[in-house]
Image (tube, rainbow, N blue to C red; front, side, top):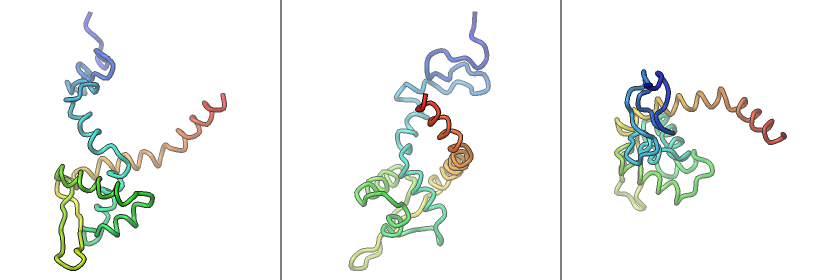
Amino acid sequence: MPPEDGTFHSPGSLEGTGSLGNRGDLFDPACPTRRLLDRIGSKWTAMIVIQLHDASPGELRFSELKRRAAGVSQKMLAQTLRSLEHDALVARRVEGTTPPRVHYRLTELGESLYPPIAALREWAESNMKTIDSASASASAS
């Protein structure tokens, strides 16, 4: 008997999910969703995308990003920015001053990542209180 609409063929598999279509197995390293989450799933990536999106006039210097992303180490910020630049989500501009001033901005592709991150942020702000309460209740049991 074929699976009902919305059922999974294997853990993590989205194939045969009716309205979701055939998107592949999240446990497969080649799955586009998994590959994207592996690249942008860190909290620092989301914070940097939000900060660069909100920046006026559209770019921030490294030092300003460091100040806005409270808690990030200089090494982690540099690593995350390098990764985002490598993935064409962030563009880097260097001023030929001494010392050089390095500016970052979202690319068009990076800007297209902002709406899903903003939606996740909104969902978190609406639901984390409930999740924290459930977690506290489960821990107390």
